[in-house]
Image 1 (cartoon, rainbow, N blue to C red):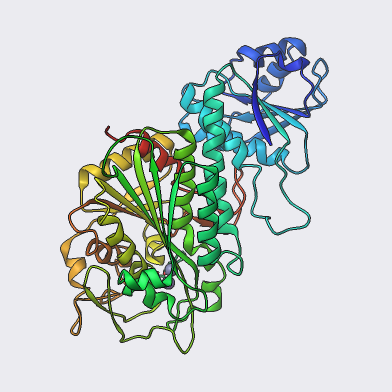
Image 2 (spheres, protein in one colour; image 1 turned 180 degrees about the vertical axis):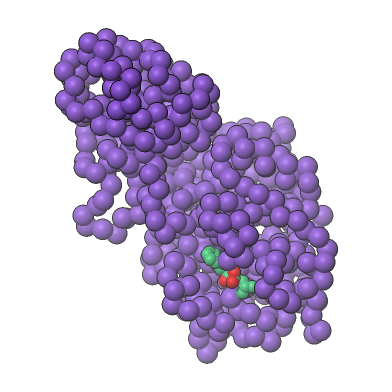
Amino acid sequence: MATAITQEPLHLIDVDAIVVALGGSELSGPAQELNTQTDGALQRMIDANEASLKVGVTTSWLAPSGIKAPVVMLVGLGSCDSPENISYFKAAGAAAKTLAVKQRNTVAYYFPECDAAALETAVSGSLIGCHGQDICRSKRDLFTPDNILWATSDAATVENGVIISQGINLTRDLVNGPPNMVYPETFAEQIQSLGETTSLEIEVWDAAKLTEEKCGSLLAVAQGSAREARLVIMRYRGADVADPQLALVGKGVTYDSGGLSLKPSDGQKTMKCDMGGAATVVGTMQAISQLKLPCHVIGLVGLVENMVSSNAYRLGDVITARNGKTIEVLNTDAEGRLVLADVLDVAVGQKPAHMIDLATLTGACCIALGLNVTGFMTNDQDWCDDLTRAAATTGEQVWQLPMFKEFGSELQSKVADLRNIGAGRWGGAITAGKFLEEFVSEVSWTHMDIAGPAFADSPKKWVDGGASGVMVRTLIEVIRQLEK
Ligand code: BES
Ligand code: MN
Ligand code: ZN
């Protein structure tokens, strides 16, 4: 796959398909030129409401005379004057996904009058829409074209859009990978191989090192699995700043059976997605290193499998986390917070100015916010506000949940410093957040619960079902805004 720019008139170029986004009923630039070349056919389609202007709705214009390409795919950007950033993502994704039903040599795109941010987003969307969850299929559903051309002069922005799409698709591939293939050791190996293709410095902790580092909480979760745990630290040094400006921490439960508090079959079916937080960190780290952003950022992921065996951790066990706190385990399915407890503590030791953790942490967050919204919880309102602003820019939907101290009181244990679940099921996303807060010390921190949006059971018009890569775009935006 190669993406490049073109400034040739679209009707003359030899491509399999042309995508034209419609930003309103006024045509401009190359779209106006296509209209002229076809004797006003495009304008007639629009005037007759045959080409929808609705976001992500596609219309195929087959074998138009006067145009070399056999297909022009029209896609709506919304009928308002200045479409939101996310509309570019959805429009490009929907066109790409519609065209991806067969292998094509070259597809050309024209998006009218968009600024660099919109163009970058559209380019990303075009490469995400044609990349599916069918990674283990001998006959694929979606095909990425061999070549993509963008009708623009801004090659640098197109290149950035490609890099961002590669980060998102890396996240998606890792999450979509089945749990018999993606487990702590293989996940860590994949991260290690990034060290060879990027400027990321990679450090992998195996079980022996984790024991030496007293990561008793993470290791308790891992002990029921035949697969050994890993903790991986990725460092990107794109700025000469001594301490990291940001630490990204990801939950990497490569499969969550629930442990002895076993999930029913239906609840287990998609639990390969439980390393979505870790995969988001990895995709973001790859992207920021390739974008060469001027920043010092570290990424840390805790990789374990939560299984059932005679060696599995039990309800009633008391375990000791790396920061010295003792935890009474009252539900082995509340394992993500136990993994993150130790990874957050390792991150704190790196003295980051800010931290963000990402985790498919609670079903309760899906109950609270639905399946498309990321839940934010924080100990630093200004930091959370920065992240909320970044999400508003990218159009990824987020909502903050309160961290009232009463939720924390539910975590008191009679036998240990903490228990790993709240007293009842209500407010479960927040009690999980309050648990994590016990391990972030004084560092400015926001927790992102992505249990809802990380993985979709059914496809959307602009992207296949399965892993979404949610929050990668927002994290990149946050990192671009970091104070120097
Ligand atoms: N990985 C799950 C949360 C989850 C649920 C992610 C649905 C994605 C979709 C997590 O480890 C879990 O099992 N949480 C429990 C916590 C409870 C035992 C306090 C839950 O949400 O039920
Ligand atoms: Mn669980
Ligand atoms: Zn889990």
